[in-house]
Length: 588
Ligand code: ATP
Image: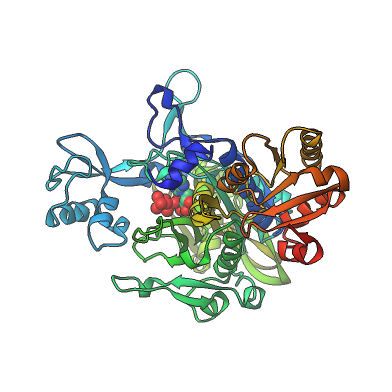
């Protein structure tokens, strides 16, 4: 267990679930501090990627019936590669085993047979008991949790492995709310479930986790935003062409990388830039952050371009450990086309042309008084086949007779052209039905929370005393302010309790604490990342002032109590900083 996991457990950020019954790998409970941090991260995501973008948010069920996943391709292809140890029976994710023990960086794109070969060639062994794994079969393992809907087993359902499908299947309704106007975006924050072969690294790889996904539906020809909309935002970009044993990401202006084609879509560039700023806002260290492009073999076959946001979550002194935080994919029209095939509704949008277009259409109006006696019960089908043929092949109507091949009872029927009333007409068309393309930023909330914790964690020394500190931004910290009386006597306790209540009424997360020496109380708040602490002392009772301490600098100022709510709200929203307060108020 890392020092951070130990702190996370002790201070109620996260811990393995159901431990009283022995627990089960891959399930974590967020304690009070973690649940508050996670909720704040979700709020910051919602604010940036839903509200600010003008998108709408939905909340779909986590159990969905089998046809959804037949259509989406998850039933057939949502697999990871599994290898089992013949000795201890422990299951391992075979591609991770290869990545962890060879120079191969992206083993996910290999086939199971190739992975089995690499395992044999490199003499890889079971990480649990050390037994050789050469010759053990590598199998595809479907990650979806199956369940039965209702009594009996005739209606299988699955826990959704991503929130996205809940948006795609409702597209026919959602487009109505968008009044059929592209582009429009729909977001969802919710649980997803994957029966991971080897859950690991605390909340980084679990079997139940939270995703925040945005599906932007765009017109097929839409070139995306102008690069000027996101120019000036730099990030380390690790392009597919640069990846390899000595590869290094390059710090680039994201807009330039779209202009020169490194990033294949302006929409993807736009979201990478937004994500770069958002991750910094929730507490990630931008020196330990990068965007990595998927290799061609790693990308889903339908995806035009795909980038992952990654963070190094190693602890001090360890080798870098890059994990995926979020994926950004240009998915084409794959998802909606699949649900259009499988579902009963219309997954297209009618797009009006700028100017109506005049187009020629070929029609038939068969003489049924001829077709009826001639073809009997097949007459209707022959008429339909003639109409289809007129649309697909006008030249078929150029001779004396037109033949409809094999369409009706597998036979060819000949009809005199004069009985068909074939005509070519000009009609005005105002638009066409299109299947939108999808741009998908897909964030894992748990990994954002974890990376924010790792990056903000520091063990330092204040006045000769060691302390663990989480330098979380005030916006996401579980508690905004600790409120302490110097001692719980002479009215200081009541004043501090009243003050904490007032701060909470103003919507600030305030925690009252009167136990132990004041230094200990500061340390306790530093450990959970509380950015500010207020102390009520004897002078407070006389002058109606309090001291306000900043976690990071440990500097303190004395300010009038009546200014406290406003000042803390400004600090939390980032509209002022502690430096400004030090200029305005007396330092303690
Ligand atoms: P990985 O390769 O790490 O398994 P993925 O490429 O399968 O991830 P996506 O399907 O792109 O992941 O899911 C989007 C996001 O959901 C990921 O970037 C990650 O943050 C989060 N996520 C996926 N699987 C898990 C998991 N088992 N536990 C926690 N978060 C997850």
